[in-house]
Image (tube, rainbow, N blue to C red; front, side, top):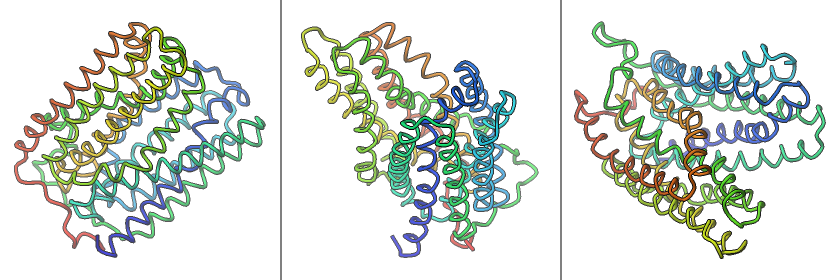
Length: 411
């Protein structure tokens, strides 16, 4: 990687770290703050977050299109500042209506920022290096979240309004620093002016890309798997000790930090991406089968714990493979002048999985038990295998090969 590219990647990583530390603290403290200090009910919070992320998912596409037309650096900076404003507003919010407005603003700004950042990365990093850079940014994200979670843990231990407010201030300040770091990057010129025949939001008419996005959303069911389904499975269906829930989360976080970059090496084209995703489906099937085996009678606490660790390691490998492959697919199948809106659309898979996943996974795994794990594994296997032919369909539907943004576009 040329020295100039290294400098840009370091700046992108620093911006990622700046906001992820605050986010890690926010994620572990926000629910308790809004229930204990503001006085909202868990039902109110859950409903507001569902509405917010649904609106954010829809807003990601037009905000990504704005980043394409106006330039992704400026859009990223403004959306980072918008996120900071939403977080800082939590310092003074004391009503449900104000909370709902703030979390909608937060979700919209976050979804738009994710799309604009991807467009900015596409303009600053050569096509062959993007997956590796995204792997590095993912490792940085996990490191920041881990540090932030530790800071949030201190606030939880003291359990005072002041401690929670410090966490929100830290998160808001992190997004301001993120905006300043992004502002120091080279500007990427806006996409060419849209022709009269070109739809404003072309991605909404791209059925092959929509199919790729949907299959990826199915694979993203792994996200609520670790945060919700596995903890419930451990305490309700196995003899493993309850503290293993935290240990497996730490294992996953540290594993991504240590190995995501290595796992992404060689994923530099469409064929490599579909192969990697297909393998992830196989590994996730194996992981689900081992998770199911942890409920076997006679294992005892330590035997069940050992089986769960093996299953979690397999899940970690499948997660990293799926991430690396999906990053490459998202870029390779997007027209070079519409990266923002296409990344915004592809990114809707995350809130979709987080919204639908808890209901599906609890019904399959907690209620149905062992057969549910095997069904889920078969779904992962089928989705991973189907992404190959669907991605080739999407590639064939392109009027011309997707090209990276020309170097002249960076100024």
